[in-house]
Length: 441
Image (cartoon, rainbow, N blue to C red; front, top):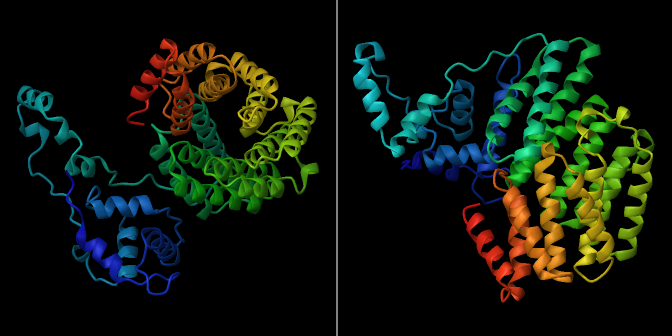
């Protein structure tokens, strides 16, 4: 078990918050101050991406030695100490022996017999931390831009199929590296493409964080992605980021903010392709549905349908390739689901969700599972509970390999909807299986 780093925690708590008079410095504030210090005291300036989660790992002792010397210097400067030891940082001890000094068979037997606790202990984690970061080129060209875009597309595809839970931290590391490319020299013709590519990757990383309920991380990454889009003058990326910010706000119980984000994105709708306008009208419909504004919800769904009817996939930017007929049916079905559970437009909501489930390919397994779960919940509330149990069982089976807290919460919602019908064996079994499946999610 990690030993807490009380020296670092006390040093932070002795420092005054720059934003709240009389309050101690928060983890997030400490991370922001260190990021600023590193940027201002390195040449060329370095962009780092410390966050509250990383500071928490330091204070919990999960990380005993920050490998980055600039980060350690920033922590010392912000917290007003002279040495790393005063912040409880200890360099991992290096063994004088090497594998070459050990009998290979004995080494293998010891490795096979090592306990699980040892494999995840602080010393192993420190050992696996990179001591030599991947060098960032000082001159950035079209090939680096293409690499960032390729990474964003690959990780976005993984997220759509499996959810962001498993690889989120790896993608965040890739984003930190890519963000440092912005400090490099590049030709004017490449600059906007670079900002767009990094913003695209930041959006993918932010959506993974949202899917994993790391909402603070998601919000910061979305803001960074939006800043990149604004810097590049990329209206298409701007629309996508604002759409995702709206979805996160709606999911977190703030449909008013979600409505604001969609309307910001639609300010210059003439600059967007029809698929993007459909996406934004759909997000707007979901916010309006949450707010109980029935007629406005129906109007927004109609606008989304009209826009999508004019969609030309060849015009879509890379991050919009996911928005096909299955996605549109699912997203509009989600908006109408809000009305359906209140007894309105049930048939239309069910029809769209069912069409989404039928048309979604395996590459978008998470969306398919979420739509199927919503269809089961609506059927449970306003239809035949036995049919709902069958739909829910299919959704639960498909959800197995998907690491998505949003998908897990939708299953919990289905379980709550099934509680009044547990006298039916099929519903009782479904509720039991859902309880077991999401117990640790």
